[in-house]
Image (cartoon, rainbow, N blue to C red; front, side, top):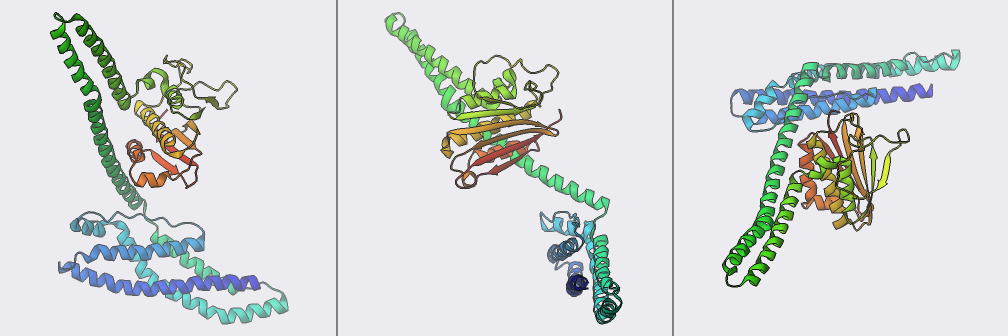
Amino acid sequence: MRDEIKEAARATLHLLLGAAVSLLCYLMIGVVLFTGFLTLTAIGAGVLPESVLLLRRLAGWERRRTAARSGAPVPEAYLPLEGALPERVRTAVADPSTLGDLRWMVAQLLYGMVLMYGALVLWAPALLVDGVWAGVAGRRPVLLPLIGRLADLEADWSRSLLTPGPSTARDAALAARIEQLTATRAGAVAAHGAELRRIERDLHDGAQARLVALSMRIGLARRAYDSDPATARKLLDDAQDQAEEALAELRHVVRGIHPPILTDRGLTGAVRALAASSGLKVEVTVTGTADSPEPPNGGAPDTSRARDTSRAPDTSRAPDTPRAPAAVEAAAYFAVAEALTNAAKHSGATHASVLLARTPTGLRAAVRDEGRGGAEARESAGSGLLGLRRRVAALDGTVRLTSPVGGPTLIEVELPCVW
């Protein structure tokens, strides 16, 4: 009997809150009518989007209340109210969820009050009748559970009215996808622009300067060739050194665009070369990536210390094992390179670990170091991590950064692709 009373009390509290929502709906109806009048007179169109946002918040509160009662979330699907005022007004009027929220608001005003009054009316006879039956005849309560059913009925009605239809959910998902693609496109354009500026700067400050110096030395050597052969020979030696340095600068620029080592040795070999030259003790773990050999012991991951033994192509991979697309491999390579560079420069760590894993939906790369942490603050202040996020987002991937103060720092990159 005591448990039934507690459950009936919880159900009654739910219905009382529903009655409070009904009162808010009553006030909201007045707001909607006033907003509609202002919009028709063309002097208050700017109020319409804000009123719709207020209605969405009220409906969202009811969704959370219903989910708490039923134990299952109530989905929502709204078109984003963004852009200039005319666009926001059109979206607010054309969004099917706005009409659905209005239907719920009118219905909630009615059933919220009726069900609350029903619960209050049931309490007195429920305590009397169920108490007598429980004390005398030992029967289970009959009327108290009805209060809980009223609360469940209200939750069912709210769920039915607030759940978006299939077409509405598709439209909202499409709008959200368009918004995401717009943001990722802007990020990709910004990352591309930054990359072009970096290449231009590297060429101007590096290879171009060395080529200019090379041209000057060759010119001086030509003038001194007949009168001072020894000086001409020395100038030609210096020109050869300048030519080699210019070639090294050009190789560095090319590696920044698409590292040739990715083509020669695949992602696993390229990452191991990165790890070997990072200045840290790096352990590389490979679990089923597209260009790695099958584990010889029947499925255990390939874990080895990073070492750069050769620039020869990676022939250990099975010939029928597919590789990830070149753009995906390049994004994973640059993500590992950025993470290891940050670890070497900022973390104070001496050890790091790299994981490359093939997943059913793509490729995962993770870099962990045991340094001082705090990478989130460096990212907000401006760092290569922003460019990393943009590069990965352009491929529909995700970047997760965990770096509390004191460490450790973990950077995880997920890149979708079809194997």
